[in-house]
Amino acid sequence: MGSEPSTSSRFFALEQGIACSRYDVEVDKVEPYNLGKAARCPRCGGVIGMKPWLPPHRAELVLHGEELGDFIKAGGDDLLVSERFAQAFREEGLTGLEGFLPVEVLQVRRRRRGPKPLNIPRYFIVTVCFGHAAVDLSRSQIRYGTPPRCEECRSSGLDAIYSFTLEPGTWRGEDIFNPRGLLGVWTVSERFERFVARHGFTNMRLTPSEEYVWNPRGPHPLPTTKQGSA
Ligand SMILES: [Zn+2]
Image (cartoon, rainbow, N blue to C red; front, side, top):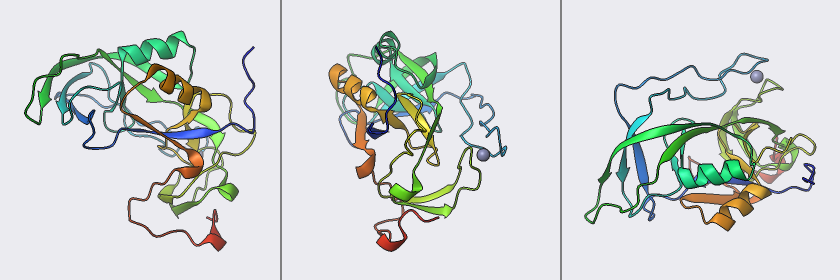
């Protein structure tokens, strides 16, 4: 039977492929489009996400690379996945993505010279769920501009991440989720990692959480004596 969530599980941070890669693309939402209300924490009422893009989802794709991948960030917390990805995700019973509403791609524009891409997949818009798993501050190297105050969402102003680990016993088995204390850092299970490798899904980058670095302001390593302190 299915395996229980265990404390020894490994996790990965999921990002889209690097800029200037073969699959480099941007999503241009067709105006006028509507945004909904951002999700709020049930305990503190604080905003814990970006405003979601509401139907109808009509977009143009601007292709900087050479072909269209299976995974495209659409701005905010919105994400496009190919039909191939969506189908396999649901057939294999993975969890943690919500929505799966169809996106109408009106056209694909190329930024570089070259033939139009032959294969334009159908895309679906999804969002990543808020998971129960919480970041383990004592075993992570995270610098907060604003430290978390609410125990439920642990929403915070993040400055930099130099590795993260989840608190044992807090994960409830979602295959992709936003961890408490690291909202916006899409985190995936080992099962998800194997799923991506087996299907060869494109334009996804997976980094073991212990090696994940996010440091938008440049290299200022955390002082080791203060690691994890808020
Ligand atoms: Zn909260």
